Length: 387
Image (cartoon, rainbow, N blue to C red; front, side):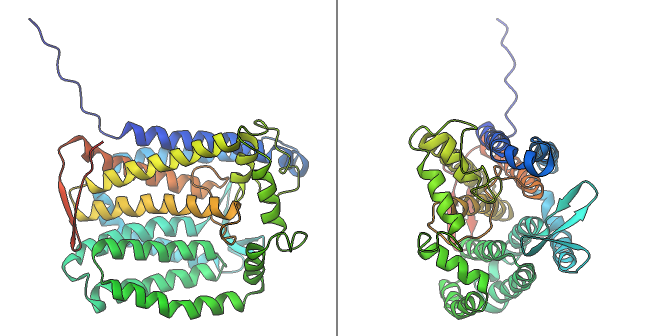
């Protein structure tokens, strides 16, 4: 009797891939829905933002394929070049004439046909560098002078460059990623807690001396008391989400995008999604992000090498952190930060970088096809949780 040859092993996680593509597809639909009226009124083309986002999604698919083909191991050799490129771009965007100002912030470099946002590249470069550096210094991570201080100082440089724009949201994310990976690597908890306590006065000064940040805090504390000034955006967002109910008003039938809610297709696209698709749509979105986080961490813990584990944890944490902060801001649970909703908000650089990062996660997920392997990170043994 002839037996059929064994099936070829799956070289990536199909569940992770489907979740990412579903988020991207949902983002394209919501980008058009949230921006069509604005684009028609301001630019005479209701498809303007959709066409640009479609182009970014196409480049994102290429970046994802490159990430999968290149493989996560080869990124270790690119850790320093990527970080250097990110720093150069962050410096360049702060130079008048090179950086483009919009909405009171200089965050973009205008290039023929598209705009580049260096902070998005810096997030990925920072995770790759941290993962490589912490893996290389694995036995000395717990020491203050080798494992903690150099990484903290470098993070301070990146944060300073982001704050020049200013970009408070990206600054918070860079610090968050530092603490996540330092904790995973086994840095002493006293160093982490101590640095947070020392940073609190600096954060207070940064907020208190900035009128626009103080306005955001006031809008967060009581948006309805400032309904017609600093709390306008948050109040409109809450009205948008609240009017959606369980099933939503229907795709395309949202009202707040009709020049009531600013940034409806970028920072506050979650509000339009909640208005048009209701609690059901919001629940689906949260489930998709939960799948990406679950499969990403699963791939990280199965990497079999410290660098891969840190890299997978870092990329998964970026996606989860940005999604959580964006949704909380839209619901008035956090002050406005300016972080996009991963894979969903309009923004070419963000979409391309995130899809490329997802490709790296998919290359990591090839390790989950084998047996369970222990991975030692810092002082803790982590083991793959099988599906």
